[in-house]
Structures are given as C-alpha cells and as structure tokens.
Length: 471
Image (cartoon, rainbow, N blue to C red; front, side):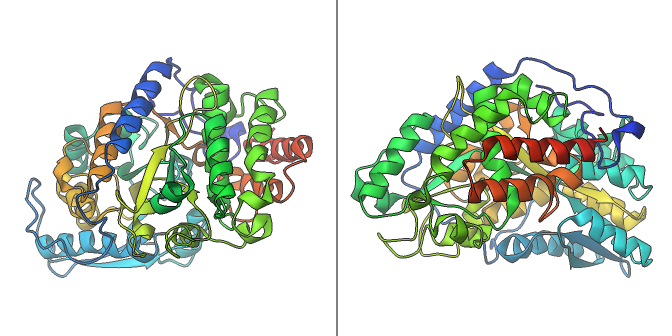
C-alpha cells in the first residue's frame, strides 16, 4: 500500500476535514514478503554479535553527508515524549548538531497527548521550535491550527534523497511537506527470554494457534507466559491492530482506520474474541489483568528479562524499541533475549509500522537546519549505533546498527519500501486513538479487565469513534 498525502484524518471533526479517501492498492504480497523476511532474519540472529546499546558514546567520528549553516549564538527547543534511554540517545544526536552548527539545543520533555502539551505552550507564548509528533493525525492538526511551518528546500532535498515516497508523503498535508519521519518502528514483534524457552522446551510460533501452544508450554514449565504493559493503553491497541490486520486483512484494516466501517463490525468481534484467548487467561499474564493494568511498558520489558530463568514472564509483545529497555537488564539481545514476528492469525503475518516526525513550530534558520539534519543519514546513523532505534532513511548503512537483530529489522523495513500499514490508533483522531484514560486506550484497558464483554466493548468503541470522527 502506498501511503499518500491526505490519507490520515486530523483530530478535528471530519465535517471540516480536507482529507481525501485512502488510495488503495493490494499489499498482501508485500506484507507477506516483509513478514517472511523478518521471520528468516530474526531466527537467523540467535548469536547476536554485539551489545544492544542504549547508553554511552559511540566512540566513532560521524561521517558528514549534509552541509549545515553556522548558527553561533542561536538557540532551539525540541519537544518530545521520549524518556529514559530513548531520550538520552536522541540528546546525543542533538549534541552532534550543536557541535556542527554552534547552536544551543534544549530538549523539552513533553507529556501525552503531545498536541495538548503543545497547545498549552503555544497559548503561553513559549512554543518549542521543533516537536517530535508520534501520530500522522497530530501533524495535520498542527497544520490546521496554524502551528506547523512547511519544511524548507534543504530539508526537502534531504527527504527526496533519503526517503521512499511513502515515508515522504505521510509527512505532507495538502501536498506540502511538514514532517521529517526521523524514527520508525516495527510494531509486530514478540520478544522472549531464551532461557525460559529452552527450559520449557518451547519453540518460536508462526501461527496464533502455535502461540497458544507455546504459551501453554511455558506455563506448564512454571513461568507465566506473557508480560503486558497495560498501564499504557497504546500497547493494547498494538495487540489489537496486529490481530486485526492479520485476521481481517489490509482492506478492512484501512476501512476501520478511517471509520468507514463501524467498530460493531463482525471483524472487530472476531479480533476481540481472538485476543480474549490470551487476555481471558489471567494465569497467562504476569500479575493477572489487575497487575498488567498497573504495569507500564518499560517494566513489562524488564520484568521479562530479569530474574534469570525465573522471570515474571517469558514473553513480551512490542516493537523493535524494546531493545532500549532490554539494555537496562543483564540480558543480551540475540542470545539471552530473542524475538520472533507476531504470529499470523489469518493468511499472512501482520506488519504494523509506527513513527515519529520532526515538525517545525517556529520557522527560523536554526529550526530549518535541524530538520535538514534529522532528514540526513548523518543524524540517523548516530542513534542507530546506540540501539533500540530504526530509521526509515534508506541511506543509513545497515552496519551502523549494533547487532544482527537490529540490522535485519532495518534492512527489512527499507526493503518494504512503501508497502506497510501504519499504526491504526495513530491514524485516528487523538481523542479516540491517542489520549491516556480515554477512547480506545481506556476501552481496551477495560476489555483486558473483562475480556468476556466483547459486544459491550464493541459498542463502547463505536460510540467513542463516532464522537471523535464526527458522526
């Protein structure tokens, strides 16, 4: 599927939307090819040759492929919701920008939903110069509100040089480029404690039924199968999206993402019923449903990879960025911590992508220079070396990534070109798909607590979606 400009709805009412209908092209073959490439590459990486990174300097001089202006005496603020190692690694990229230009860059920690955070800063007359926006709809909302400024020629030149058309287009609004997709994510992965699997005699599953068998095998060995970061509602939307994409197929996925079909559709019932095969077994979830709902995403990872052969859980589902959190444990990616693609529920395994885009809120020589730098392979290579990061930049040398697992993920992402499905909740209006304690996040948290209530969950999802999409 080629992602085209105008594809994503804004967070405002569609009554005033200028979004055009999604351009549809069959993507099953491409998705299957990507899933197959991931399956082959990930299982081939059992020996992980390097550390997963996540802290410390790279110890190498970064090659220069982009010319930046001298900005001595100028200052910039960059806002993002990133915390921990992810924030620390991005700050190293900003430090390189400071070194090359002489500008001073301050990282501003933001809160979810970031659009509300930015609204408060703008209302107070103190907008950051650049914001890293995690939803395509948030970019459109920033444009609609008059906050976002178009990218200049230098940044556009870097985008044209380094990005596939699909990744360029999802940063556009009304045909104009506003976003540099600096960071991408493969959100169709399940990570596991290799010692747990070895002790249990468990194998990597390729289908949903095999996943259930693997879970039973792990459980019978005395280890809880799954760790779920249910305190962060976005992790639950990712579970749903992978099941739904594989089971219902890409066309239905696109329709539900645009609310062209209702959440009361039988396909949603099927996906929720499938999810309940795991969510409905409290003994399969670390701490049960109540424990999962008190577990934030970082802890859901670390508790899977601490405790030796008796961790709190044997598996954790989430994207490639899980490596950042694994790096905080004693486990090594590729040997102690391994990964397999999300098993197929239907005909093909799902491939769900996400990403974060740099958007200018202040149009200045310095902010345009930072956007240009973030669109270059120079910036991406710095963070690639640190681990827990994927770039959609096709000119980043795969050797920049710190281990075979990460390298193969990056190669598969680039090989996919424009054929991928973007995170469904990130395409939705923020009120429905991107607000803690509300909309889809809250309703799926309630479903985790009571997975027998499929019909009631569908009705709540549809009521909230209809309100957010405008009818």
